[in-house]
Amino acid sequence: MHFRSRCRPECVGQQYRLALSDTYPGSKQRENNGAYSVPGNFPAGILRRYFGDRVEWRQNGQQADLVPGRWSAGSLSTNTNRYADGQLIFNFVKSELQNLEAGSHLISFWVAGEGIGKVRHFDSIEVRVSVEIPETVKISALDDVDLYYRDLSGGWLWKETKFCVFSSNGGWYRMELDGQNNPGGRFQLSSSVNQRMNYRISFKDMRSGWYSTERGRQLPSRYQGSRYPDCGNNRNATIRVEIYYRDLHSVPTDTYTDVLTVTVRAG
Image (cartoon, rainbow, N blue to C red; front, side, top):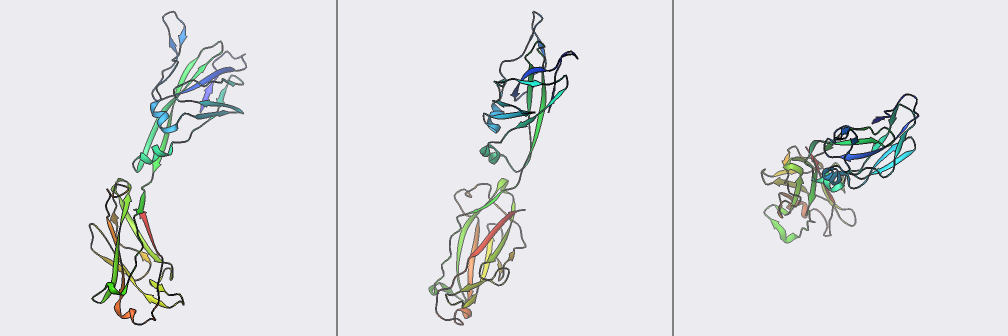
């Protein structure tokens, strides 16, 4: 950003102050008596919502804290009759960014500058900030699955768990499954003495049928998440852990476990 000292060539600089405004604050304004006046305060409800109460201006070792809507308490100076280059530093309020929908957002505001020396020049410049909010996905309410021999049904021992997949704007997501005992390979349960037993995973959401896989991989389909972080106090996805009954009789009696990693990505 640039501000220029508006005085005669022989001057060596000018004192000025800054303010931030939601809307266009105008340029130099003339009163009825011929003098120039500037606003004492500016509308800044939107700026305070996004940036809080503190924005910083840095310029060649000088610094000023800006409260949106008010003039800076301290004055700044240009060293010569030229532009003063500075940095406007602000941090977004995290909760406000989280409230934005996924996509591109343009936030614009105005910086006003007033010369406070003999030359009471007032001017303003628009600042535009582009914010890209990525699609957000999140798993919640995913529980452990405990299988017991009494759960045997037909040719399979199986049990399922229902959980929630949130996607901002109700967008699409992809799911990847992988087992800790045999990463990237067949799903395997392991005993305390490292006996292995195969299992498979079946998955479905509220719109699709079951898809089954015996090894760690990304599932080929896309699924649609809920636009509500807790799925409206509901569940929109189901994982079923399944062991073929013949595999149960091929290993010694013991407790068999694995850690299944469930990863969701936007898209």
